[in-house]
Length: 76
Image (cartoon, rainbow, N blue to C red; front, side, top):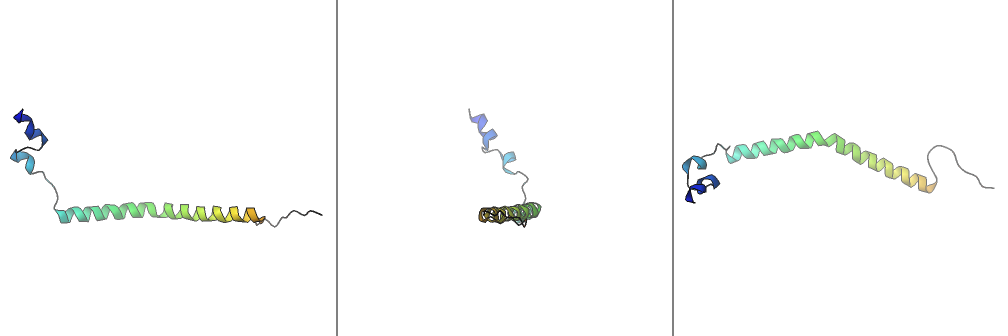
């Protein structure tokens, strides 16, 4: 039963020294990854916000009866 402990992070020296970057390098890599995600998502999110604002403005204009076509209904 004791032989399974090394597979789960037991006392074996060969499992302790995993090749990991230093904390400073890791922070830099995480910051770069976050910046890449932010720059790749930016324009599409801005376009979605702009479209949402335009849709809301169109909805309000339609509710008020002004659809910006220059046409209006007259009831005599």
